[in-house]
Length: 427
Image 1 (tube, rainbow, N blue to C red):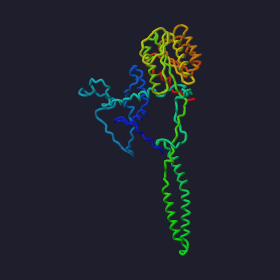
Image 2 (tube, rainbow, N blue to C red):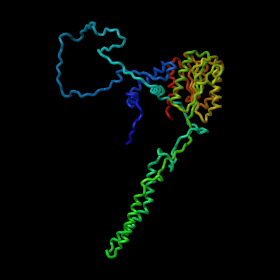
Image 3 (cartoon, one colour):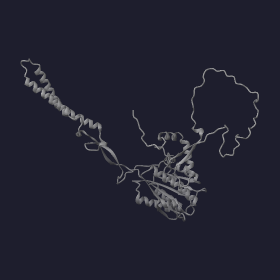
Image 4 (tube, helix red, strand yellow):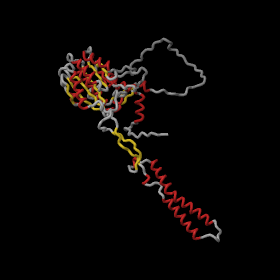
């Protein structure tokens, strides 16, 4: 039987185990509250914790008790004042429910508040990104092989105490004791047989000096047996670990956002919220994912995180400039043989005439053969334009690796995000 001991430090007056059981039990209520919180929050407080309330009726537990049992005869008394169908007059003032409070009063004379508790930042993000993953993430063989993994490579005579191999050490000690004590035991056995033979002779024929010599030899051999150490430094064996190069699952995510004049401030805020969710998801779940931020109007530019989320640059719209820049960056810095490539694009669908065709050609001929997954979200309440129609052609050709969704208002961001990056069933 194996016992697992949880030695994680608990917060003051809290139990990590009991809290985890509680979160698992009321996962449905918590996920609903988390989804509502993500939809109503601003960009700046997207990743803080959350206060969750659970109705009292949902935390009540069934109670089992012994019934009276047996056969009983009950006489219920009647009354002389009321019969079925009579109406009762409402009692007068003085505590009969005529107060001016703001809460919801109970019609049973007493009530209970909803059970409320707070989620930490880590717990909140766990629920936000539960069941999400990067689609089609593959392990790539890197030329530099900078990712290594320590693997067992037999045993060695030198090492640190933390890596001692007890079984092999005891086996070596046992073999050494057998090898060292075997000749001593054989000599001891021969001396004991000679002593018995000498003592078994007739007293007249015994040789006292020979008997004394054999006893001294037996005593010396027994001391030599006891002197053989149970375990020696020569016996110690240590697990040998070597760093074996490993294929890497490194990935890069290109975040492409339209900042043209047709994108109103409300549209830009929605796009920023979408990319912030994506940023938090990647930073939290993937250590080997790099982020490349690309903003575009008539010209595309690679920017840092600060400028991507907070710059107020604006202009016309040429979407193909951003796709061309992504293609150049991939060619220059991220070989598809070594990297998993992802692109997430947000736009209002507005584009210059004839440029949407260029976007489709760039995707079909250059980008999609090298990408793992491409997501496009169009932020508009209106009818789709030429860019959406051209992208539909790409989605038809690559149904598993190209996804496109429409976002009308801020409340659509989280459901669309979960739909785009939901965990796929393994094939």
